[in-house]
Image 1 (cartoon, chains in turn green, blue):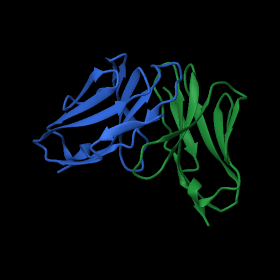
Image 2 (image 1 turned 180 degrees about the horizontal axis):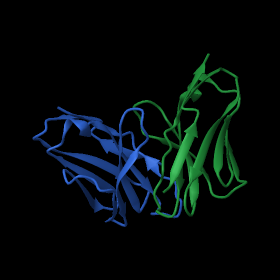
Image 3 (image 1 turned 60 degrees about the horizontal axis):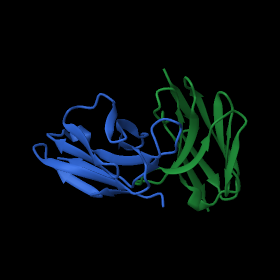
Image 4 (image 1 turned 135 degrees about the vertical axis):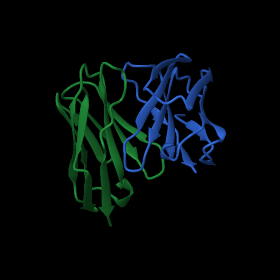
Length: 109
Length: 114
């Protein structure tokens, strides 16, 4: 059975304090791994797709990386507007996204 | 443009009512999805339409009835819902089914069943 675990569940950082979010997955026939950002009461916003181990993608203060068992979302010098829930979702052979529980990130000014 | 629109934004309905949620995209995407999201939980897949045909039903109760009138529109018909069905209902679309295409989500409909 496909499984996804995100850690930590919640993370509080000071503005400018860099950190990483983890997504561990067990998915048969990984086709791609997606990262989304979700603000309260809104739909998830697409951030990145990673297709193979070793791949990296960057967008502003965010960088996503992928290994055969994990993906990391690195956030560098975060700002308060980066506060959100970050969702990891691999897609396997069933051709469906398998969402993790998310990491609730709070950046204090 | 990567916009998916959903109406209404909020809906309050009684357990005997019939209502519909609507979703629209104009990106030429051929796969559309309905998800249900409870507070502090990730989205749960309900239905997938591929090329206007229902391809996945995640064992959703029959009180939820999806419809895809054309490639741009997706409806979710609601009837005899229970209070535990109260949630944020999200629509998404992607260029195609499978193939690891990114899904673009709408803002959601906040449904309250009284």
